[in-house]
Amino acid sequence: MEVQSLFNPAPDLHIIHLKQIIPIETLLEPPFKGAHLYPPEKKKLPWYKKKRTIYELILVTMVCIAGIIIGGVFGSRRTPPPP
Image 1 (cartoon, one colour):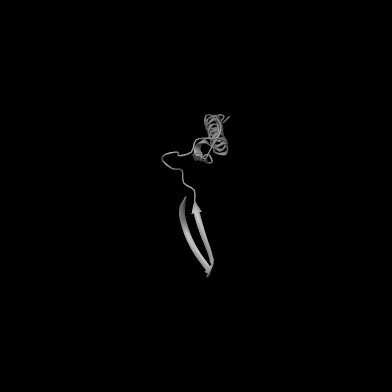
Image 2: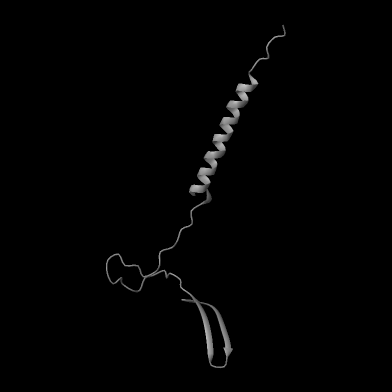
């Protein structure tokens, strides 16, 4: 445990804010196989691996491809020759 802050609002009242840290050496043996002495660390996913970002990138890519196709179709049309 690591002390984050100390607070003494009254003469006999002590408030201590502690932070749990994972030690380098584990001194306790797990009580049974597969037991966790410390909570598992939550690994944050990078922004580019989130589903929402992937869907947005796919949508933008599809709109760009559709724009290129439509621009190519309308850009290659010839105007009819005058009579």
